[in-house]
Amino acid sequence: MNVFNVALLQILPCKTAKENLKKGIAACRAAKQKGADIALFPEMWSNGYNIPADIDMLKSQAVSDDGEFVSAFCALALELDMAIAVTFLESAQPLPRNTVVVINRHGKKILKYSKVHTCDFSDECRLGAGDGFYVSDLDTAFGTVKIGTMICYDREFPESARILMLKGAEIILVPNACPMEINRLSQLRSRAFENMLGIATCNYPEGKPDCNGCSSAFDGIAYLPDLTLSRDTCILLAGKNQGVYIAGFDMDMLRNYRKFEVHGNAYRRPDKYADIIKNQICEPFIRHDRRD
Image 1 (cartoon, rainbow, N blue to C red):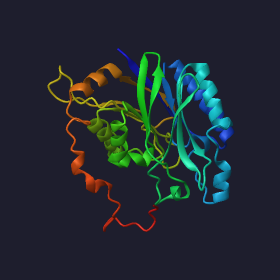
Image 2: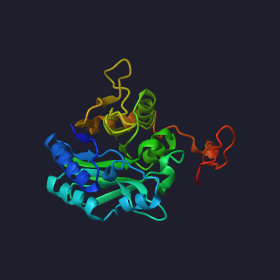
Image 3: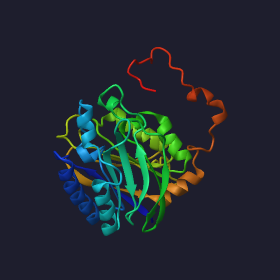
Image 4: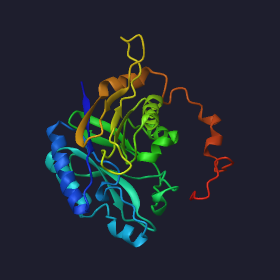
């Protein structure tokens, strides 16, 4: 049985990027000790998901994807022989971006994703949006796993996970920073179910304002031959406290399930979906703070 172990680093941020780097390294070491294949941070770990109102201050907190912060995790991934999905406020023009970089166990950056669905109705109106959704092959001790990423609010748009599935994703990693209640958890459950893939979400614990822990993992496998009824696809739901939680995805079971079940891409009719890509917005959905 090939189990892909994702460590959800549900940890509280510190006051500086330097302190977050130190604490993040310690959390990754703990994840390795627990048998993780990859460690996933909550959203924008470099500054603890802090978005100052002052643009100059915001930009001063941003770091580059090849700077000291990310490079330290590249070196750590190589040392630990463990992949790391590190999140940070990325320096970019004209505005910083909310970004995750997946580093493989050889210390190489294999995927970079910036949040597409920025929360423009809130503080994220001061962040730049990403350009698209990406999938990459992640080398593990038992073989390749196809990894995709989305971030927090992306979860609320079915298109995010759908396009990742269409690009071949088997597991979607989701850094998060918001209260995870039944409805948001249900969105994640739905994205996993309808695309027949695994979704692992890492949130900040209670103690971080507007967060409550409840990091989760859904494996997307609703039916098994030896079960009369459907099964619960939730394989992990953390509590509110700080900690490192391991979600184990049975890749053999998932891949076999995807070969025969009816969801995903088997019976879609994309020629009927032209309306879904129209840019027109009508009442009651017009919002004056929406950005193009």
